[in-house]
Length: 280
Image (cartoon, rainbow, N blue to C red; front, side, top):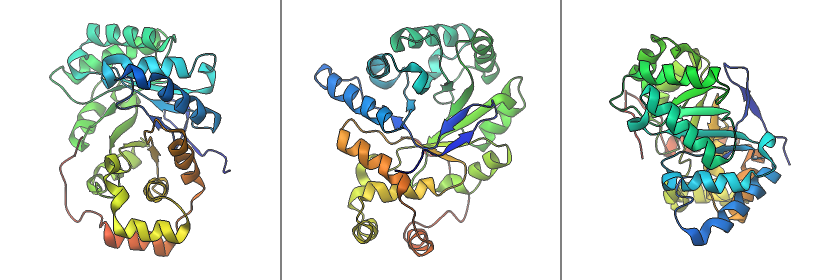
């Protein structure tokens, strides 16, 4: 099994390039034990990056994560996100405190603004800096920000300390390659790619089926492996099934050939003009 690759954030933190998402976890009590077991198994396999948010299950996913990381907090790079409507200075600090309580930890490795709302960015950034100074978060970033949002943030106090931007990115959603990825690369800000298999819709694509069959891999692994070939990109596939967690981890060992990458480019062409930022 390949050793987990990592990136170094502007804050100096080391973050794995492959982790686990938790969207739609914590929504049904009957699934709680299964979800916890999947996350714990992922940690065992080296998937120590766990991404969650107060929005997921209205805090339910954070409770799942809390159980999964019990007695293992130091092994995990933990990310959560604040709702835009909670993103005032006072609201962000209060939301973070609630998140920390649900996660049963006293700090987050990374705290993100989930998407742009009506609260001025300067106020959210001020809250992030206050939380960082208090030791409650180690670094902060954003999610679902386009280039204009990133440029605006960079002009504000604390904006140059944003360490990542989490966005929708997969083979069928390559619009960010036109401008956002180049901008982030120039500023040494990694992209965290969510929905790498387009919420499962990529698993029936014929071109991916052909490559997967040839390589003895799953379609999901091909899609994840493609993202892992991209520069300065972190991938957080979500799964609550242990066998899928194992398959996701194995995608790190899958090295696509130049011919396969060219075939994927032909099937899923990169953008030839600006594309509005997409969200799920």
